[in-house]
Image (tube, rainbow, N blue to C red):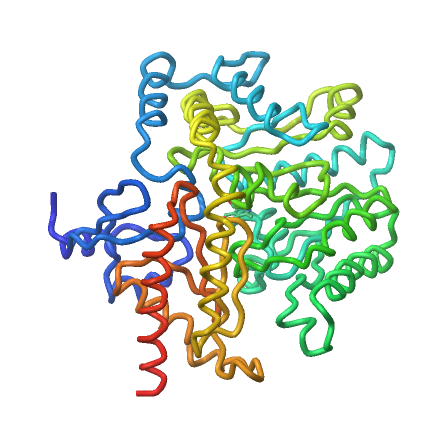
Length: 454
Ligand code: PLP
């Protein structure tokens, strides 16, 4: 093995990291992560770090689960690859499709596999447009999504996403996609004096306004994350999604839940749409389906779309080399089994989810914390300048990034989205580990406060 400096030099010389300022990274040097176990990582300097982000919201069963490792190894020996094109299939892909249908909400019996969440959302765009073609309404092409949503980094994924800094590079969005404002009460409802629940209804009606602007006969689908993740863990008011559902139903528009983060127990149910109280027609998944041990994604296809594709569709001209990759599917299968054996969905819903909510609520006594929100094992703390008035820090102060630096320095990975400090720890986390996590967060908050006053 090499020294940290040697790794960093080779890294800067050859590796263009995703979402990274290459020059800045070259100057600073990457942190090299070498191994992991349970909720812990170790870097090349030997520092032990609590991974409160589950990698990138994906390592739901925690690191080092031998059931997943063995499933991959056995499948690699048995059959490392075969495709699902041209009327062939492999046992792991069939078995995972069956297992996913078994845990999906009623009405979902079919799966289309992809290699990632971004690819899954590209499939969604193709599939909903195909659906409306088959309904004899080819003008229904338009898809509505939300500002600050995240749906991936491919052309379609980044277009569906509402990160304007992503649109600014590469001429996005692609045609036929537009965005409505996100249901973020703190920014868009609080100043108007609306309660969270009243704001939820107001925010849902922004969908109605956009549908009327476009003409309902032109709108194919609405897509959203049940709880926005990368946008800063924006937990919508409980009134929001049911009202979205009513509006979409009234116009016959398809509803797509991007479950890439929320799926597989993260919110205390198998699917975030169950927690948020709506019934999507399609659900994108990735990440937690294999707990990130190997790439896999796809789309759960509900009855309405599946029936049209199967009965009327003929050949769907779409698919990926790795759609239904046998090794990825074998790991997915072992992962679902482990989630069931360890009762992780119940663990989140009944035990650690409520416990995290309680612990986060207590952090509101800290002078920097203006708001604290959780949904299952997703959590956000909003750092503010003045808790009483709810005044924000100036963005150029970069307070979130300062706090993130103190987290890193104290053996904790927490993400900063603006001044929202967010977490999504592995679902296997225990109450004692949550206490350790909150202890480290408090220390980082104290150091951030000291910086501000120093
Ligand atoms: N959708 C959501 C909600 C996500 O959070 C992500 C990734 O963070 C994606 C899609 C894209 O998934 P991938 O990075 O696997 O392409």
